[in-house]
Length: 279
Image (cartoon, rainbow, N blue to C red; front, side, top):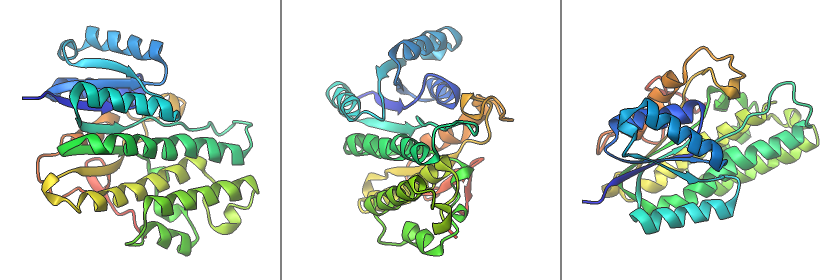
């Protein structure tokens, strides 16, 4: 029987590292810790192998920069040739500018969206064809990405329309970037947060992805978005109240949902509970 495979993006530190650690303990298969920086990724692997006895024979490293299309395709080709598929994908890699960053907001909006949304979607486009039956996908999002942050009801409706597509979401996010560069984004009802807007788009995409998977229900592929909580990591400037291990709990729960689960599917989840995202 072919070994099962789990892939975690941005796995060399913080919540991603904790997700890898937990999956090494409970997942019966190979766990790929991926990271943009090969040196940091290998350091993380060595650290895990020392601290977690379960990691020794399970964990592997592969370089993956989700903002680089060539890197994504090289990784997808590697997974296809080596394993012919994967069973768990946790899209954890992401960026957030600090509140005191001097880079113009319009540029922050573009850079954040390119990684958190467009980069993640590129990973999905490359790896979704390799998902095995009963695969589980987790898109790490945030409560900063609640739909209600958008004050324009017409834009909110576009996100949640039954016929919305990934292209629809991409177009809205591109419009946000354009308005942000003109410093008119708030006038049009967009939130004043580049990170939050990228995560709103990713939650909306998650629901669209599940609708597509549900066209072949017998395959039982499930994708959910989740907020790991306000966690003490570099991204929160170590101001978070939770530990990375606590932040890994809901993502790992979603990554290991039992076969033929009815809920959550295509939902936004926090503390293992479905949140009301649409408004």
